[in-house]
Amino acid sequence: MSKNLGSFSRIDTNVPVKSRTIFTSSFALSSEPTVNQLNNENEKVLPGVKRIDFLPLDTSFNSSEEAYKSKSTAELARALFVFQLTSFDPLVKHNIQILKFLRRIFGKRLFHYVMEHSFYGHFVAGADLHSIKPVISRNMQYGVKSILDYSVEEDMEEEQAKNKTKMSYDEIPMEGSLVSQSTGSRANEVQYEYHEKFGDRRKDVVSARTYFYDSEAQCNKNMMNFLECIDVVKETTDGTGFAAIKLTALGRPKFLLNMSRVLTGMKETFEKLTAKETDIVLKRIRSDMLSSSLTHMGIPVSRDDSKQWFTWLDVSDQGEIDLYTWSNLLKMQKPLHNFFTVPNLEEGKLESVLPRLSPESDTELKNMLERINKIAEHAADSGVRVLVDAEQTYFQPAISRLTMEMMRNFNKEKAVVFNTYQCYLKNAHDNFIIDLDLARRENFHFGCKVVRGAYMDQERERAVTIGYEDPINVSFEATTAMYEKVIDTAMKEVKLRQPGAVAVMAATHNEDTVRYCVQKLKDLGIKREDKAICFGQLLGMCDHVSFPLGQSGYSVYKYVPYGPIDEVLPYLSRRAMENRGILAKVKKEKKLLRAELKNRLLPNRGGNRQSNVKL
Ligand SMILES: Cc1cc2nc3c(=O)[nH]c(=O)nc-3n(C[C@H](O)[C@H](O)[C@H](O)COP(=O)(O)OP(=O)(O)OC[C@H]3O[C@@H](n4cnc5c(N)ncnc54)[C@H](O)[C@@H]3O)c2cc1C
Image 1: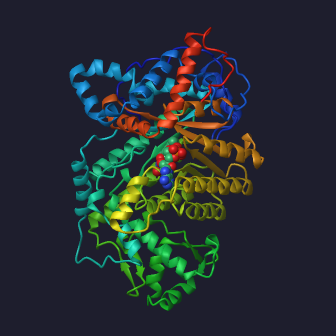
Image 2: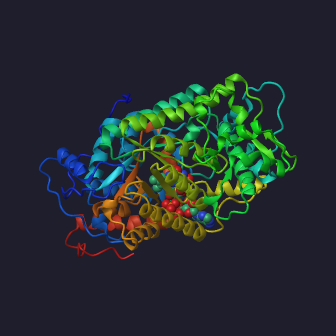
Image 3: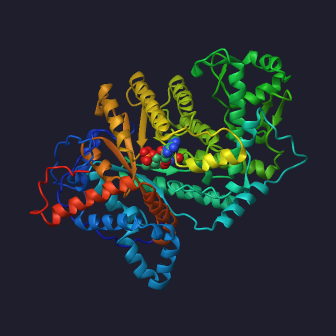
């Protein structure tokens, strides 16, 4: 299934690096091959290469030698050059125009040559399966594994993006009259409404990619790209890697918006029905009490209505309903809009939040669910794990819910599907424990990626503009505290469940957070062999954190973008802008790069090789 995009030679990837040692990973995530399998695989790739013991981890991350062992001197010079350029404001601000201009005056060949020796070579692994392989296997020799992302992005102006979004919301065909769209509470109602000002979802977002709905054919194409990415992971990483996916690529965002609205409305009602119980995971109600409870709240629903509504919720063997379970929507014969209903507490009735969908739209909705299912199924069949990215809060309840449903179906033997938790959200920990609880009760493997969150400025502006509570924590410190709370809970769960049942990826460039996780493992006596936590950083960023972790035997991943040069320019543009936004981190990287270049090029004047760089 892999694409033949035509490979081209890349600089440096085969240049022998200074030391030819393998740092084998004895600390892989639970679902990966065992240590011995991995070691054997490495030996197969490079027969006769000497293996050495893991290095102790210097958590100051100040050692230039440990940071850049895997890099040739030319690569270090390129990295320094790229970071210097991203410190130059006007260049970053107008980067996409400059790149297009250079493309025009240089012509294709020269432009590609320049890009390979600068931004593209630094931040992107290559165009296709063949060109990315050397990068992946070299990183693996130093204990750093890969998350692959086919990073081709459409380049479009803001107006075009807004128009696309508007059209995707406007053109859903309806039948008959529009059913009232008001729901349980005003806050819930407005948060999940389309707002023209935020039609270009890329605004103020540099560390995440955005998909715009174009057509069902485009969604199928996106699905094929994800399926191919899974194949590439299988082919290039010996089963140690991940594929990254985004659910907004797979259908109309409006469906995710409305699904989120229903889920939030149901959660609010559920919390009211179970108000006496303060512990969120103990909140349960018996199904036979449901319609009487709703009636008591002023919503006179028939048994059939309430049964249909709670098809979205869970009915356990004991006949108890909690925040999870739906019967398999994919197999549902009824039109799906029937399930998009929430209780309106003010008016005392169950209401649909979707207009009556035409049969075509109902099919579109089912197609979206089928695409998601197909990706998870293909990943499970291929033995490849999938990270589902978290996106904006108005889509996230649906994204998270669909991901949990996939986890429930495909994580029976090992963690195949991973959900993402954004710790800048006030409700991050609450959502996290509900999902952990479900995985424990139903005994499936729980895979999670923990991030701070990429959409902060946009989320805040949207909340102020539309008029609902800011979903983001009040400060950076509060977000960090939330991150640590989620990690603490995850690590407790690791101890509680059988080995390997909980797999956590701490995806962050924050050194303090990495130190926190490392210390937490030590404090709880969780051994490397328990394979409980791994780390994730972007290719071309924070090598001084990733490589020392990998060389010390921690499980660590680089998020590895790939795709042809001309088609990944929007990705490169975002990387340039992101680097401008994190000047302190880039300053440290530049200092380490300079120190290492000096050590290599001027060994007699570079000082003691063993000492760390003073920062
Ligand atoms: C491998 C990988 C995968 C990722 N996947 C996703 C994903 O699926 N979804 C997603 O949304 N993001 C994702 N991200 C991006 C991530 O959420 C962060 O935006 C990015 O990594 C910066 O956070 P940090 O912890 O690395 O760095 P730091 O610089 O320590 O943290 C910056 C982050 O802190 C938070 N923050 C900053 N100021 C404040 C404030 N005043 N109040 C509250 N919070 C504040 C914001 O989230 C900001 O992005 C991913 C990142 C990586 C490396």
